[in-house]
Image (cartoon, rainbow, N blue to C red):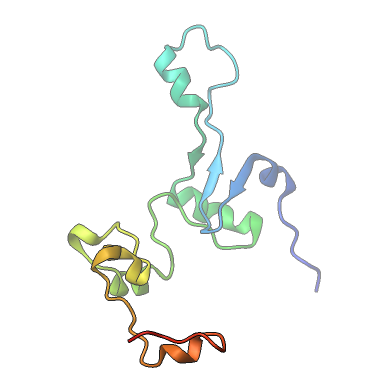
Length: 124
């Protein structure tokens, strides 16, 4: 059985992100710009993400799964169970670094002599 070949012309016109979103250039921005407003030309300069139905249709050309700009990731449901809701939803957590550093308890050494070089006495 022969290998599946991706459509090279299509690959030159798009970029696929890690999550499978398809980024492409806007149409109507190459020429005939004198009759377009400045606002419209500014908006046309931006790259766009492909909509879901379009991405679904083009999966056959690339032989891989794609997703549109409004489609959730495949494993987004498992993330929703572990993420906090409400006010802390967008905040990143890094363990105990989220706490105020002065409010964190300092570690207490039971036997500080064990960490001292030979000959130095620890005052109690």
